[in-house]
Length: 330
Ligand SMILES: C[S@@+](CC[C@H](N)C(=O)[O-])C[C@H]1O[C@@H](n2cnc3c(N)ncnc32)[C@H](O)[C@@H]1O
Image (cartoon, rainbow, N blue to C red):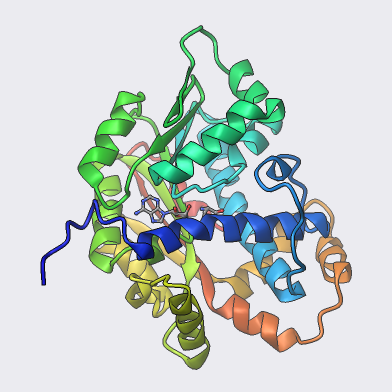
């Protein structure tokens, strides 16, 4: 059998992986429409609310978004916005606009995804003034780059690249003024699981080698060795979507290990049952969790528990500047 080049392979499996960004956006859009959290920008990426999603799914997305945002915002505040963020496999994520509205934009916010996904995102930004206005407002000169394949402004940059081809990825990031000296937050939300363990380890290793003061937040599956995990794998397989990295999703320890064996000094991981239970303490109102639990009637509490048990947030830090990054937690 002829060997296929691992980076230029545009087979059906990659296509199915690219399609997952629409699933994520549709699920977020639905949960937002139910009132789980607010996001005035997502409507420009997916117009209709779409078909109903089960309450467990909505609550799962609520804990995912709130959990990731909690750590992301903590990092940005710790560095007093004197930092950069790289969202790896960002899809149609709207975090740039949220951070701008909340006045906590990092010095520069980078996003990377496959070129075809990036081209779609840029098209939406170009054609929707509520999306393009904040990009233009945060740009100081007349050099804004907004073509079909990349966007580069003072504060926001979108790059089309394959995360498995690290040399090209790094070249492109440097071309758009990535600064290895700045404290850097790397984020991957349901992305590493689509790469082989060797590929995700290389990416994680590259990040540790490149940035001396950094945090990596990874949200994805965990406890995948049981029956529930097997069903999840089979369901995705039926859509030609392979979880090539599922091996690392065995346990919280295997999630942490990926970082600790790749140059990171400190790693923590929590399953989403724990994250969900801790979220209200960080919210403004003490009754927040009640608000969430009143939004929709949950028939089967067990199903939610099972779902949350199979996702996790793992975060790793290295901290040459001694900012106290290893203390960032829930
Ligand atoms: C499940 S979606 C998540 C999107 C976004 N992080 C979110 O949570 O809304 C996974 C994203 O990772 C991207 N992705 C997966 N593997 C990639 C790779 N090797 N290179 C670039 N992007 C990749 C996909 O195109 C897709 O947009």
